[in-house]
View 1 (spheres, rainbow, N blue to C red):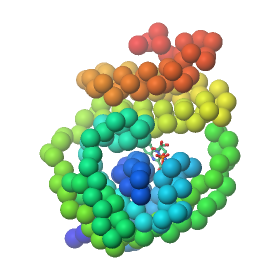
View 2 (cartoon, protein in one colour; view 1 turned 180 degrees about the vertical axis):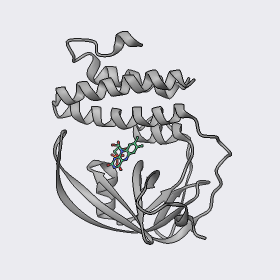
View 3 (cartoon, rainbow, N blue to C red; view 1 turned 135 degrees about the vertical axis):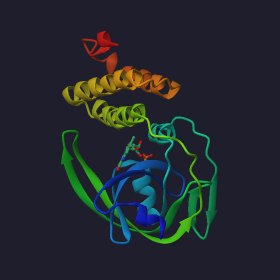
Length: 210
Ligand SMILES: Cc1cc2nc3c(=O)[nH]c(=O)nc-3n(C[C@H](O)[C@H](O)[C@H](O)COP(=O)(O)O)c2cc1C
């Protein structure tokens, strides 16, 4: 049984995408022997276009996923061989990436999406610590997903969308704390959200409820 067999077909999994000089979380879907993912701009998309090879690695360290999404410092070590690069210690696959660029429109405006699929050519050895899942982790992930979109919304001047995303970040922080979450990373996310949107807004959304 290969690593890819742990991915149920059609289900979205949050994994790490390692390109030439970047690591970012992406949602992947397995179809057959391929892993499909979409990149909405960003550094990884540019690197894949220049050098269509990547690794996809699995972690159950939600704080790591979140730090890498927001480019907060993270303690990781890389290995490389035969033009592939990966994070030491995390199980995964490496392979060729096929891609297609398309225009994309959503509430954040128009952009291009790089639709990618990775065809594994090798497996990366690694072991995960026996870390149990916590409902706080789900909310930490949601905070990061909304926060990365909030930063884009603010940059594009979509203030109504930004307001909703800001509220989503704050609400998930509340739930995170309710489930016992205590991490410094969550606090930094709140600071980042406030720095990007909180001060721009005329009101102080959701703040009172914290
Ligand atoms: C759990 C999670 C999943 C994400 N999945 C994707 C994704 O599938 N595609 C994408 O373009 N960005 C995704 N993001 C956002 C990127 O991590 C973020 O926009 C990043 O800063 C852009 O990547 P870059 O380092 O390549 O510039 C995700 C973020 C999180 C927290």
